[in-house]
Length: 137
Image (cartoon, rainbow, N blue to C red; front, side):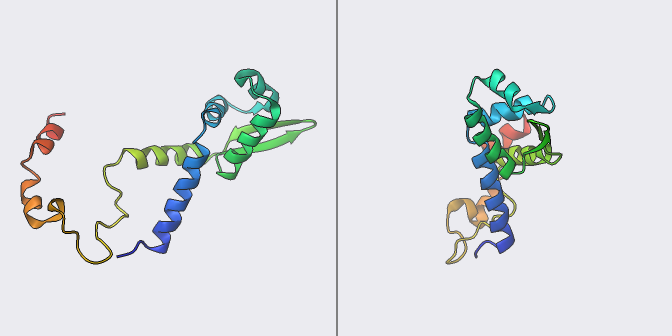
């Protein structure tokens, strides 16, 4: 069984988001912008980076849909997009869930033959040490 085109598209969007979050400076910029709209000169002062480096990071964040800007005379102000909070929350949920529901657990050549997927495993799943530790957590 292959992933649907829709699922592949979702995974591509998630990968784009994770690439945008893949640099500490971009995470720092998002943190500063979480406090409200900021100009590039403020980001320079806060982070100690050159304007050109900050602009490159902002470009990546903008293309990922996390940041938007507005011009006021010579100054350009950046802020998080209204959807950035939902995007970041969704990314965090993706990392913390145990198994993606949209990824089928089936090999391309047939059902998965591993012990975890065998019918006996389903019967034992509720009584193993892992399930007991989850129940008491």
